[in-house]
Length: 173
Length: 407
Image (cartoon, rainbow over all chains, first blue to last red; front, side, top):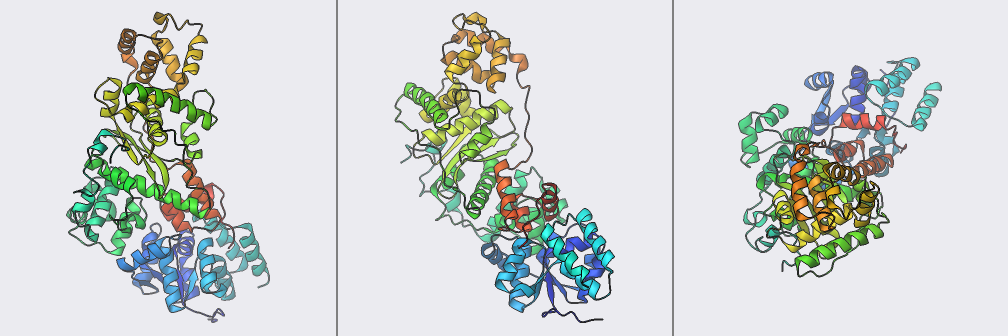
């Protein structure tokens, strides 16, 4: 398997990315791309309430590591990250402490991670699909189809600019 | 000290420094958390059994948690947050009784707000704070307040006259003319008043209002009443906001309204608020014009029949009670005629109780979506503001075609 070129291998995901992959039935792909390097917090886990069977199996099989956030930490997050929910805030806090990348599709979260950690620390659903194509897990057509599935089954919303960038990057692979 | 408190029960409150629910007890965290959970549960009308089922805990555990006798872990708290449709901050923001501003403290301690209705105040304060936060995020003028139209009152007559004058002045100030107000909610929202509508079956509280340094002016209306009653309550509390001078908080209850209409022992500010509401919703000239348009001579009181009253009620969006009192005060009908009309239209009483569902103010929702669109808040925070979960928030974003601006 190819080693991803991105600088920090461990990724902590918020619920936006998980929901995209879980609801479109592509969660195994996410696990394969990150191959044991996917982490979440228990707050994020509790935000994922639909189609979460695959996630729970992955947690039970230690393919996804869950970090427990204490009540005291939650209180701190509520005060420190007032424009984010606690799941998103807990991801960012861990990423900052451990120098991990953050998987998120949320605009405000991406802006925060880019501002505080740097551009390379943001991993979006589009990035993951492109990496899956790179790694040979998906064809370009399958990647494009998956985006459509995520839009229809997971209410994945993205701007024309983001989609345009994805298609452009896909075309040069 | 209490000359600017606006209800009798508030005037009967203990001294602000005295023995109060907020200060008498030590608000330890588990106890506070338990009270917040109970408060949110009651706001949704859930029993302990129903909440236990929804969060996957045994019922005795809910009882223990609500009484502060059992700790809650982060996962359980998330479950409570999801089921009870409140953001975690609702459960975690420890109240500081020393720093709680006076109007809120007064509202929390108002005797007219029964123990079972206190969750409404929690909900109202939490939503108003969120509202103000959104305004700040979007750099809007959240501190906008209605004009102060207060005037000294010593007698009941003063109260009626100043209430009526205040209503005319506010209509002029807001450029409302004399027409019936069909969209009072929006007019007030545009004027910067934060509104919260919630059905509260079995409660004697029709509404309350507060003027807060933290979030400005806000009105709660119990929607488990006929729409006409809701509108009158809104106008009544509006009267308090603009006419009470140093208004802090006021509560409008069924009991007060009955006493006020029936000439009972009423506080002058309540009389004034009722006079304000009546004149604001039913301006004298507009009412007389409406009667004239029916080719009825308002001087001949027997021409004011039940169908005429019904027509006027529909025109002005008020209850028959309110319209009959207004016609009496405008000397269009006599006291006896009011009484007989009141009896004649018994059959159409209790016709249109249309409780609104759990809904957030339209402007508030728009601000939340706008903050999300501008990447000032995340999708999870949008869900918090909309009192829903991440899935529903994503669906709404899609429904409204709101792709977030690329960051």
